[in-house]
Image (cartoon, rainbow, N blue to C red; front, side):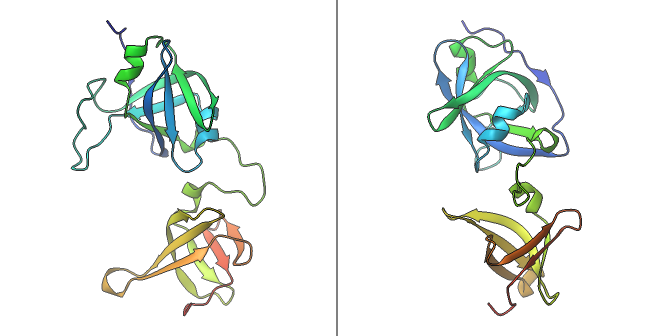
Length: 197
């Protein structure tokens, strides 16, 4: 019989970012494989407090089978490390494979405040770029960043300018050849790009 799960019911922080989901158990002592979304592995290793939610089905309801918990729970990471090309984790108070199996599919959220600091002047978390205005060198507004698309060698900024039927979508490679500056404080990205590209 699986041990009692050490959950603490919690509110999802206002700055929570979905960073991955729990996959299958790893070993016999409560460890689980974790799938990180978009290079989120370093964040998973750095943050000690994770917020878990049941997986959502395509219709928005809980996926079955999943009876580990309802709503949002906070868990404390006892250990997390790289294993191959993925991350494995064990939570405080959980040391049983069956309990780890009960977590399969849980969505992982981490407070943005718990992300590790970036190490370079030109490094940014994608979540920090969403919502920034993008202007060209002439000051022409090109749109607002709605998403970033990984394409292998680099990311692409996905912009929307306007709304409704008049909305224009743009895609700009997020590389130094086109991006002049990223000013997080001013919430603006300046690019070498023309509106008719």
